[in-house]
Every structure is written in structure tokens, then in C-alpha cells.
Image 1 (cartoon, rainbow, N blue to C red):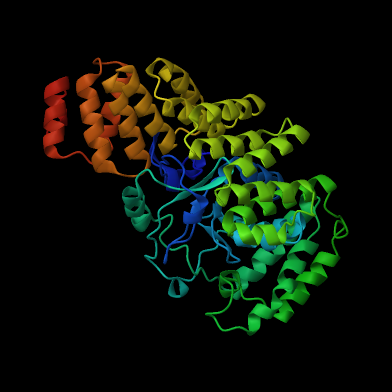
Image 2: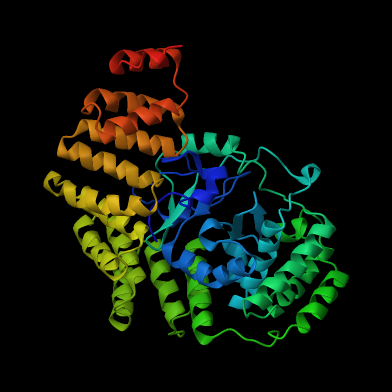
Length: 481
């Protein structure tokens, strides 16, 4: 897992992520050095959004065939992990699907999770909107989080800006307590069965998931899981769903051993990060020598601050699975958190070697290099950050590290521009404009960097005085009000 922003790299996510071509305006948040997983708790009235390369990869392996079956382009569908033990999943703005970690952990197999995602895809593809009278608005006061390097980390970059952005964002303003009409729920059910069948999967999982939690219907609204507050399930609905599911040719298709293995690893990882270490040790006892159990215990020892034990367990896993990049990622995080940046770099370098196309892993490596304080190595960090930003151009934390690296090199203009990019990514337009104006003063005129700084000023709500200054500096008299 790695430090980064929320996943909005695709142009099709423009409603939440971009305002002008080439200038990313994403709901992002920089991470500084990762905090301990103990802080990964939902703040009252808000949500915690988390990132993890390994888990995102598993989710997309499971979900992309469903998205394709629905006529959606997988890379344009934003899948977001919510760090919350409650069972919930919901759809916002058509192509953003949120899934709680608690729901993932409670699914018995991949097919059940796929069924829920197929149902939410039905809402997304159907353009369903929640009934405004049933939504609680303006509930967003969170700071965003990243599950980095195998670690659930707090967003330490700029929570004030993120809170302001999310609190006012059309994209996130009404994501809690989404309640759909019965007609929309029925349509999403039927669409889910269609998508599962088209993708060669069984719709049995969705039926099982609803049946497993059918008892939630007898609870009061306050006691139900959020999923069943917004997706009420009746016996009649389940029966209709079951009947149509059983008619499908792929109803008896089962999960492959590979799919089950990935699912169990994902569940173990999330459980270990989302729960106190002792709960992990109870659930995954030492007698359990499976890979997911060993992985969970290593994370639990890390969370319990038993660093030596955690490293010993991780090394044992690496000995058995030497080509798994996520084990090196976790090892690097453990070392980084105890101040051993050189050892963290070695581990992160191996994770990048094994999975060079993962931007979050490269950001981890760059951070470990920068943390060692050797200005002569700034260019190494910059190269890794450039490669990460080529994939996730609105990754706020990468831009923050880039600013640090350019400062270490003695290039203040480039450093201020990177700081402007970072502020712009988190939606802090005031600071983005201030940094960009300063960058214009320090950068060589008419260079690509100088023009980029100019663009950021122009789309960051410049004041009349800002425009006058720019007009005087550039000769662009037409910019004057």
C-alpha cells in the first residue's frame, strides 16, 4: 500500500476530479510520514477513504468484468474503499462506487462481494439518484486517509483543506444515508443478475449476501447496518431475486481457487489493519499457518509496536513468497515508521522492482530516499515521483515530496510550483495561487514550468490585484479587469 491521493486519474471522472484540461482538481490529500493504524477511525459525521494497491488490484480483478458487462469502461469507474467496519456500499454521481472495508470482511467469498458490486453498478449504470428527502446533507467533515504500504495511515498533509473541499463538494456532499426507491432497488437487482451472467459469474452471491443479513430488517433504523437502511430487503425481494438468479446458465459457477485466495488475503489484511492487534491474534491464531493468517499476524505485530517480531514474520513470508511486492512494501513501512529510512528504502526498492507500474509503490520509495536527507540523491527521488505522477497526476502527496526534493536541490522555483500543484490537488485554491505566483517570480519566463504556474493562477480564483500583477509581469494587458 502506498501514500497517495484518492483515485481520480481518469479524465472521465471530470465531475469530481478535473476542471480544465491538464489541470487536475481532484479530491486528494497529501500524506506525510504515515501515522500508526490506530488513528484509522471514522470521524463522527464523516468517512475515512483509504488507498491500497494490493486491495485495489483485487477489487478490480473482481469488478472489471462486471463493469464491462454493464457497458462501462472500467478505468472510468472510481472504486473507493471506505475505512469503516459497518456493512455499506453505495453509488454516487453515476460512476463512483464506495465499498466499506467492513462489508468486504463480512463477505464469505468473492462471489458475494461481486454480487454487491454488481448491484451498485446497476445503480450507477441506471443513473439512479437518491431521494433527496432521505439524504442527510452536509455531513462531510472528514480528513482523508490512505492505507499505505500495508499500513492504514492518517492523512497528515493538509486536513484543513481537504475538509473544506469535501464539505463543499458536489461529489461528496450527500453520500451518507443514500436511500433509493423500491423501483430503483428492483432495477438494480435485475441489472446485477444480468451483469453477473454476462461476465460468466453466478448471481448466487448476491442472493446469499441478502439472505445472510436478512435479520437486519427486524432492527430499528438506528440499529441496522447502513447498507440495509439505504437498501431495504424484503422476503419478497429476495425470492424474486433468487428465482431469476436460478434461471441463469451460470448460476452454479463457483469461485476459482485463485479468486478465493485473493479474497482471503484481502479480508485478512483489512481485518488486521481495522481491528486492535489482540482481535487479530484471536481470529488468526498461531495454529493457522495459512498465508492470510501469517500476513494478518505480521500486521498485528506491527500495530502492537512489536517491530522486531513484525519484521521477523515478514521476512519469513518473504522467504516463502519472494516475488510478492506487497510484503516488501509492508516491510518498508515498518522500517520507515521506526525511523530506519535506509532499510525502508531497500524494501521499497524491491517492491518497485517487482511491480514497477504501481505509482503508489514509487511514491513510498521516493519518500524513503528523501527522508535520509541526502541532497545529492534528490534527483533519484524526483525520477520516481515523475513516473508516479505520469500515472496519477493529481497525487497530492507526490507533489509535496516533489517540492521537498526540489528544495533539497536548491531549485526554489520548481519547489514552489510543486507546492502549488499539491495545494491545487487538495482544493486549496488560495494557497495554490500564492505558491504559483511565487513560482512565476522564480522560474525562467516562458518555460513550460512558468506557463504551468500561470495556468494554476488563472484557474485558482485570482483576485483583481493578482491579475494586475500578472499583466504587468507578462505584458498581457487584456488580463486587467
